[in-house]
Image (tube, rainbow, N blue to C red; front, side, top):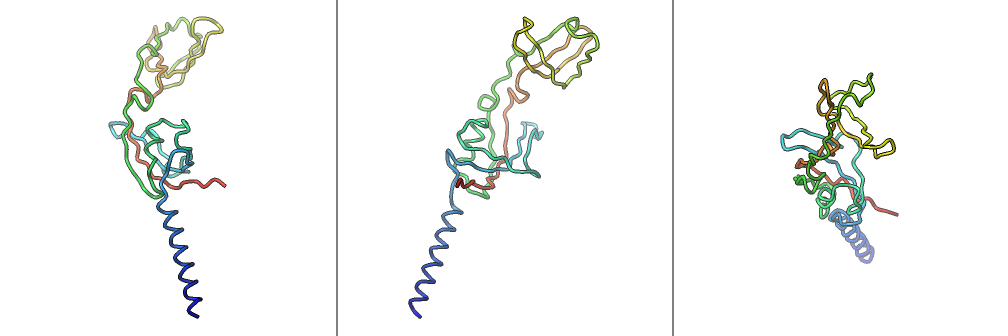
Amino acid sequence: MKTAHVILIGILLAGVTFITACVSEEAKSGDTVRVHYTGRLADDTVFDTSVGGDPLEFTIASGELIPGFEQAVVGMKPGESKSITIPAEEAYGPHYAELVFVIDRDYLAADLEPQVGSMFNIQLTEPNGPIITGIVIDVSEATVAIDANHPLAGRDLTFDIELVEIVKVA
């Protein structure tokens, strides 16, 4: 009977050790993880969130996301949350004035009515030149201004991140 107790205690200790090892596992470079996040601007405006939906899944250090976001998850344990601020230079970069184009409305189709905030494609220089996508930022009688920068360029970004799980690859 004593042997059965020793074996049972051994099995229980092994189980506790296994569970503790799983719970205390930290995310590291190369791990595939699932996180919930909320991204905010400096004025607290939320620009994106996964809360209320499926968590975001990505592999740390794969270049799928901005580096500061990926690196913030390194060292986190499942269930852990944190808030980080990523400077513009480490997020979507600075806002470049040379990527704001002002075009004469005479170059647009007569029936085209651009609206501020709408997406717009510009074909530069030649008929087979590159097409740049931007957002209309100003419309006047004579011109249309289009910003081809990323919409979050030039902005510091704050993310609230919760590590939901480290995905085990079979």
